[in-house]
Image 1 (tube, rainbow, N blue to C red):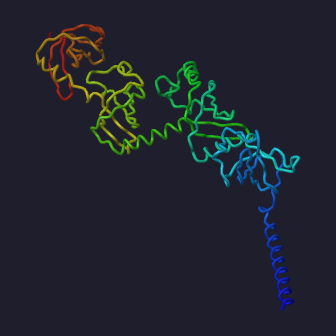
Image 2: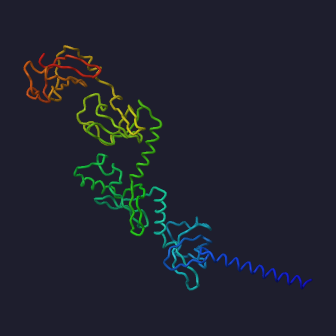
Image 3: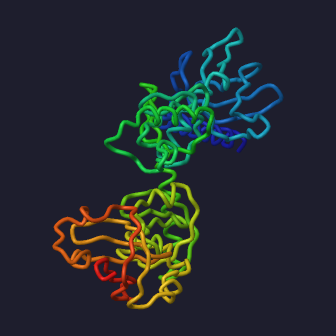
Length: 387
């Protein structure tokens, strides 16, 4: 019986041995299970196997585990106290075999490579990257990102408020010197950006601040659009000035205050009233195209002086005024605060008048008679010849 048992045991061992050999052959038949070929100077990814005081063991798929010790452990972007078994890590191969036959690795020598990988991840996930301006030129600004890695923000990708005094991009003007001056003033400033282009081989990184500010403004704009309605009053800031009115950004929602909605008084030049950056209160008077077109008013939040001013006058009164504008069909005369009237060319003289400029000039003081009062148009009909 003992002999039979020994025979049976031997057969089982042989059988198990065959299975082990078969398993090993099957395991090694897959390329991913073969030991990696690494050489000195390679940067490879591995997993932390053990962490001990002054030593970290890492498995990089080589025939033996690698050791990181001494000064090779020092890296600004790695906290050894937080490192734990199983963590993926990027390492530099110092040598495949030292005097003791060990694979020697380094954290210290991979800081730059790890930073590039971090930037690649930031680009793929559209993350915000902090950039510090260190130089400027005619095309934009050069920024430090970290680990002596630099990126470039073209002028077109900077927020307009940083580049142009008006806050609006200008075309057709000789503004290169003023732009360069403003770009130079950015040196030392930290700017939030997103990565447009990244090429590690060419050491080329193109950044955009606009991608950050526009996304932030868009979110703020949508939030404002969802809660406002016509007649609401918002606080905003002048973001642009044009001959036909001013643009106001109110809680992320940019809209136009048309020239006619700036003041109850006649406005000749918008730049005389406001400057980019001025804080203003506006009333929402129109929203169309899903918020693409927004109309604001400033004057509707101000007291209308017309009703009070016109109460002092009546049809037939002769009053003194100042010529404000001369046109081919007559002259506009201001007779009081917020009160403007037209002297039609037919009411300028008993004689035929071909050119009003032959009779009056801007700034002349004249006496006029009130012929009509239009409350709806807030306008007066005046006469010079009837005085």
